[in-house]
Figure 1 (cartoon, each protein chain N blue to C red):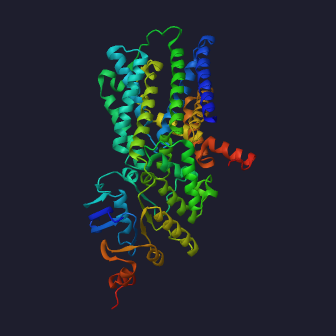
Figure 2 (cartoon, chains in turn cyan, orange; figure 1 turned 30 degrees about the horizontal axis):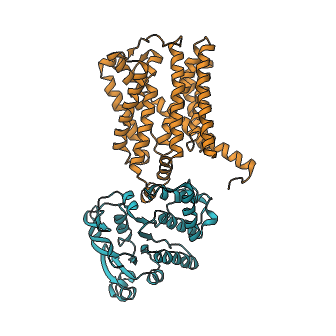
Length: 244
Length: 322
């Protein structure tokens, strides 16, 4: 499994005069666990927004499964197999946990013609895996922070993605909760899902990733195995500041 | 299946409702109840139509009067130009309303919140200005409409319009109910909660919003069509009256927007009160009462009558939900 699943090629994104991403290129292999790090404002979430289609590109192109998806609307990209969670959880507040996941089955998984019973089974087994089965019929507005994070991952998973992008799914969680979410992501990867993890919690992302890319001010400053990236002087400077 | 049973109950109630409306026109000689009843039915349809976009999708539309007025003038134009019968007027108005819904939606549905609402008001003003300057349909001074004879078996045109409206109520409510229960409704609910998350979950948000806007607009224009005949008169100031926009919105909000029955309850409560006040005190008090009720509900029961009902049931029944 080494063919490229996602190909980001020279992607540039500007907001007015500010260049958030400056000609970023990266290739993600199928089945990979990929870590994306960088200080605040370095362009991590902007890159994710470009990949998922929330933002349009100013230059460059993105291909997925060998096809150019640069101009496709977000929902089509989701249907093709790119799912994501959000930095700040975005639940459908007026729905229960099960209903949140059903939205993905209704809209992202098209053409499978699942019967009502099968749909229910699929959702419940996902919630089971995420440890959310007990909350299945509770309104999503009642969930705790860690439960919301898990529900976001479950909802993304319900879309049956090939690529799952986890945008700081562990921010604000306790260390035991971090381990829980990390375990989940490793398990999902074991099922063949490619995962891009954006994270500030270094030990988590370093433990999880096979390859890591570090962004700073919209440019790639380091790229390689976790150990290589950590050893890179520019990464240390970006995080800790250059020593005088 | 419980769902199928609920479905047949709905259609039985709907059939009984239309039958009762029709029977009443033969049993009651006086025209006045139908004159007043027509207005109530008209507002049930308007509130139901408003709720499809405003309630399910959360896009607050202030342009109800644009669609309503367009329906009125589609009918006026067709009647004056070709003498088209009522049914043709309504069908044409439905089509024109759907088209306007599509165009307005395409232009404005990318805007969120208050910007969308302001854009819909602007649409009203544009269309009204156009009609004011169109002499063929009477321009600013309005146009007199001479009602043709009522179609048998009806003995008066007003009674015929009343039964017609009863049928339209059933169509509008059935549509709203269908949307609510279908994947369209679930998609609208998702995008109302969080548009970005919905899009990232595979919901084609723009398409769904457009669909809602087209259906909502088509219904609003359809209700407008019989109005010229109802009043035997049409003029821009009353056809495009902002009152329609405010009433439709207020009725849906007061009834509750989450379920199709909400706008019906709200429209019944408000328009029955208004009709009673018009008879007993004066028609100006109407507006005051509408405003007061809206304020009361927004402060005291933001989820409308439906919300009050749910809270009461939860308090009595404890936690009976799974």
